[in-house]
Length: 415
Image 1: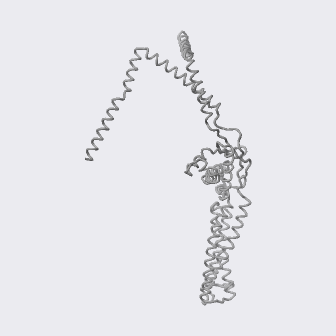
Image 2: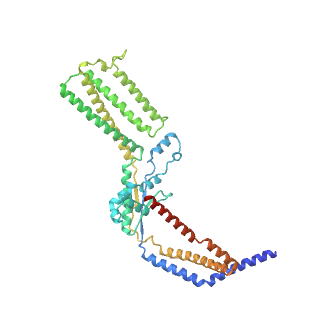
Image 3: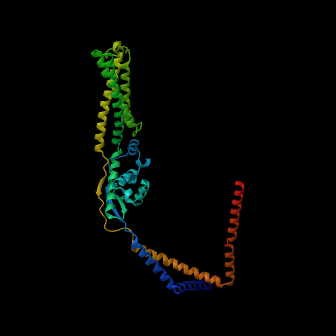
């Protein structure tokens, strides 16, 4: 019991000692703190103000799904299992892309504005002042930009939305958009093949003259060409569907069956002899006189039919894409802000005062503790030994001698 009382008395004495030290140096603590606060307040007056202009957008909702989401639905699992992020995450990432930044830089000539000769350096400045936030409850995305001129900050923030819309229109983020891109590429190839086959046929006619073939042969050519074109078109559809559907998908299986059936029918039609069935004339029964002409005509008819089929599929994909367009809707356009966000002078001064106050109190305690050590002879001797161990003069001398000796050796080797 007595030991507890003595311990409590020692703690009270220590607290009183600390309080006495603080009160003894109160003038130093208060002056240091006030001077630091005044200095920071004066410095803050010279810091140029920074304004934040914000605009709010609503990214595409509902029916606009990515290819990964479609794949997940076909597999009967959740899209999150495949690591699919939300639409807001996607568009927040798009805002920060290089394409959008370059759009903003070029629109407002920000390389001259920031006096930066490097485009990459200008992009870094933009990224440092760009603020993108996602409101999980409302689903809105806030895009803000910090700049010293409030009007310019609003213009740049709005330019980010325009850049986002531009890059969004150039991307195919829906299944219909993916089909449209694929059919555009296939249609381009089909057009080139059609022109080539048309020129070959025209050249053959000019070289050999007009060749007449009977109606039966013309019917076979048209039928074969159209069937080959249908097979090619269905193979294109299969390649598109395989990009987002699994092998168990019923539509994919149905399309595969149709393609196989058409190929089998074409094989029978192009065979030279079809035993037991002469209802459809075969290529082998045609006159050998116009074989080359028929071959070129058949290739031309095929490319022509394929081009028409792909054109129809492209138009259908464009129509589907327009119905399922991924539109970025602007909820609020940025306006010139009236209040600055930087510098926050009151916060700067108050934080400086608190930090300097704590540091000055700590420095007072350390100085008092050091004086106590020095006043004690035993502690003073220990301090002297510490100082001696911290003497690096000899080490520096040795180091310099080593360097000098190394230079001498190098000179000797050169000579």
